[in-house]
Image 1 (spheres, rainbow, N blue to C red):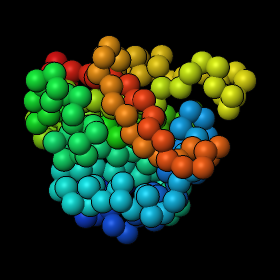
Image 2: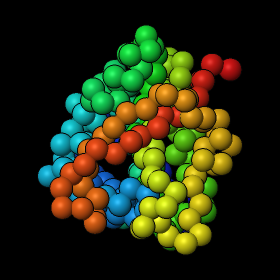
Image 3: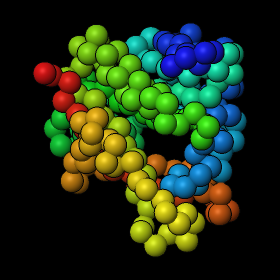
Length: 199
């Protein structure tokens, strides 16, 4: 990173001054395929509340000057909502051993500059420092023939595999939000990806 582009780490309540900027960024980036998220600040504040309450949460903010152009969040899975914990508990997996990497969002003009890799590296370093054995995240699953899928769309699965994250068959959940082409919130299928942090 060069010039005025830099990363800032906010933990727990340190995120508070950046909350609106993070919410607006998530709404903007997740509006695109495959999430198609028709977001609201009310939804965002409820979604982000656990990060403020958890002292072990992490938000890496990519700043261009003082403008938030990207962000990556994570927190102990045991502090996440039930929808994310339940699939692990059903398999007898101790959620206390897993750090949940929630999302990485970047404005289009800032992609391809190494920030995405820095987001993963920063969250993993934080998770290792806290003593977690695994990192996990989940991603929405859309049908191949989805009508809003852009021509030439390339999923990130190859990049995730390069970073050491692989899907676990049968380890999935459902999460609700409103798609931009829908009138109401609906459940979306989400696939979990895991990586061992023990090396």
